[in-house]
Amino acid sequence: VTRARGCSGVCQSLLSCAVDARSRLGLSESYPYNAVAFACPHSSVRELLEQSVEEASIRHRLALNSVDGALLQRTVRWIGQQSPRSTVTGPALGAFMSANLLISNWSRFPLHSIDLGQGPPSYVGCPKLTMAFDGIIVALPFEPGFVNRRIRVTVSLLRAHLDKVLADPELVPFLCH
Image (cartoon, rainbow, N blue to C red; front, side, top):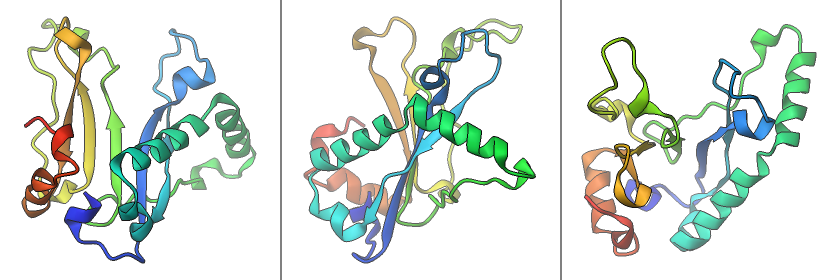
């Protein structure tokens, strides 16, 4: 995606990925709220483009693994010490129209079994994303019972960037469109 966007080598690229803080903090199933943290590995575009897809994936996995319960507990304690807490903000994600990407994983949410009074949904997906959402990737679950328990990935990119991604020989083996 970075290559398709034509970003320059000195530009910084941030990959923000939502992390399930609920399980990493050991919150019980009865905890009624969502708990999300973000792993945000970053590098220069030059460094990123010099890596293979596999190397970039390993770097991303290491960043995800670093967001463990101990880190989250230290963060919660630090936020609790701030006054007023409403002024505490995270890094601006800035995924839109930039060198950055935002990844959110909805694949483990029980979306197909949610019943708001009229039965479970017949389809679970993202709304049509416009070009204002360039740079967002969402992993969604396939329908219950789907063979191989795969996920669907929705990638929101400008058409010109998407065409370049679909033609990239390094990425073609990973794509099914």
